Image 1: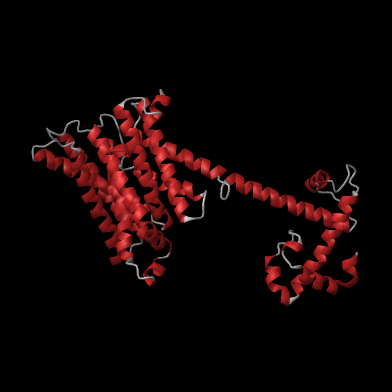
Image 2: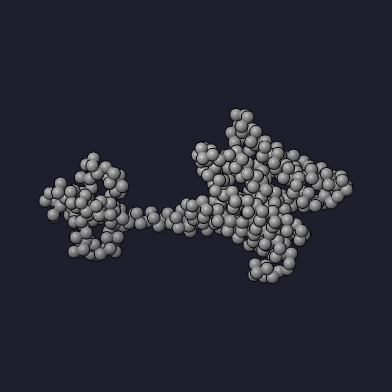
Amino acid sequence: MLIDALTLQLGYNASLVAIGAGLLGIAAGATGTFLFLGKRALVSDAVSHATLPGVGLAFILMVALGGDGRNLPGLLAGSALSAGLGLLCVSWLTRRTRLSADAAIGAVLSVFFGAGVVLLTVIQTMSGGRQAGLDSFLLGSTAGMLRSDALIIALGGALVLAAVLVLRRPMALVAFDAEFAAAQGMNVKRIDLAMMGLAMAITVVGLKMVGLILIVALLIIPPVAARFWSERVDRVVLLAGVFGGLSGYVGAAISATAPDLPTGPIIVIMAFGLFALSLMAAPGRGVLAALLRHRRFQTRVHLRQGLLALAQGQPIYEPLTLRLMRRAGYVRADGVATEAGRAKATRAALDERRWQMLRGDPRHEAAAARYDGLTPLERVLTADQITELDRGLGPEAAR
């Protein structure tokens, strides 16, 4: 059944929801990259929690006007106004008071979320609000989602993604260095407002599917996962969109096969799975890559120390050093140096004497700063520099 859901064979509605969730994930991942790079991840948390009172007020207003309180465009409009107000409150508190950004965010999200919970309680006492189902906006739900709802979410995600593609360069510059961006003539406040506005838009669009509590995860986890794979902003944005899209698409497909489970948590679990994979397996910054680099460095250190011990005629007692030396063919099983080991030891001892002279010569200060004591000097110095060092060593260099 899961294969049917992934290949869009589970029905028109389920396919539409999966595609909408995929587009939402792509837009959320790409948008969240700039919040993450600008160290503003918590802003999305404040915006998401600030949407709840807007949802409640929009429902009450639509019911009072004789309409359907569950109308999705109306609920999203209310949540957008409320989120915008919350964003303005955070900005005002940060600029006009002594509160730090994290304190302002904490105050706004707690007050707005508390007001939203109160409004939901009031709605349940209304004759037209019983069983309103607005609690689905907390954790997300696709159960009972109409075709029009899925189209609104897909269209909203696509529009946000298009805006991100257009504004990605100025937003990246402001995220990394706002002062430099201002010096280049950019309107930093306007770009910053656009960045926050896109985060607010994707938060509002994703309310129905992911929920206001978990939309933060879809904004932040894909960029964090993508950051493990690349150092370039464009690639991080692209990978964050891919990870977000996979999380949304696969999570919605799984949710379609298990309708009793809320959609939002499944999407977030999928995003976490991609994050865990990136954390472990990314070639540049992953845990396994770091362990391999450490292991290679450890091997180089032990081989170097073992060769220097051979050059000085000292016995090798350290088990790992002895094992590595045997594996490299530098010593026999009984610990006696082989011909290749003696030649390599002589070369290591010469490099060590060259290195000592290099450190004491101010003319080679730049080269000494680059040398790690393990890399052969031929990779750090030119042939002329090595010849000059050997002349300083005299007969020692010929041994």
